[in-house]
Image 1 (cartoon, rainbow, N blue to C red):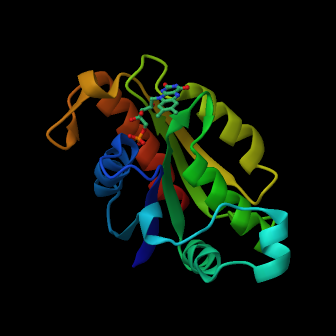
Image 2 (cartoon, rainbow, N blue to C red; image 1 turned 180 degrees about the horizontal axis):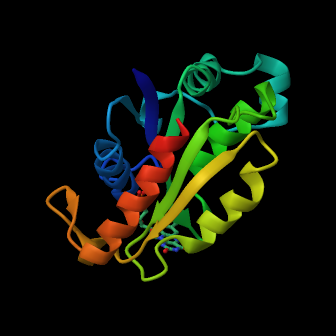
Length: 176
Ligand SMILES: Cc1cc2nc3c(=O)[nH]c(=O)nc-3n(C[C@H](O)[C@H](O)[C@H](O)COP(=O)(O)O)c2cc1C
């Protein structure tokens, strides 16, 4: 059976992006899903001096190995001031020091959501522009707007958005 990893680019314990990846990954047929949480990875704030003094933390290797041993990735990015959250960027930076092509060409369903009407579209565009140079293989992307209005009781309640996401999930599933 194919195995996918699913995680949010957030360290919030109530992350809306995590809620979206958990729901989205439940729509992917016939796969084993491992949901990851950035809080379970102990990563100090990246700095070149720290890296030179202490090396790269084990948990950066551990996360990268989870990517490499997966068949695909479902990722939803939190948007902080129009960019990646600090927690995600920190993980991204540490992993990039091990392997510049960290996404390892694994098929990726890349998403973003926020409480606002743009649904994290700005950070999604940043990631789409960048990941392609870092082993990224984004097969579908999805910006989910106004999370509080469109998601309730652990699922999407807006039919048009739900239909759109199901199409993206089909493309992702077929690429695994
Ligand atoms: C420091 C900070 C900056 C934020 N900047 C943005 C932003 O630029 N665009 C946006 O849509 N939401 C922004 N938000 C709101 C987040 O989208 C919201 O907190 C969301 O819940 C984050 O996703 P998460 O719950 O998965 O962590 C910001 C929140 C914080 C704390």
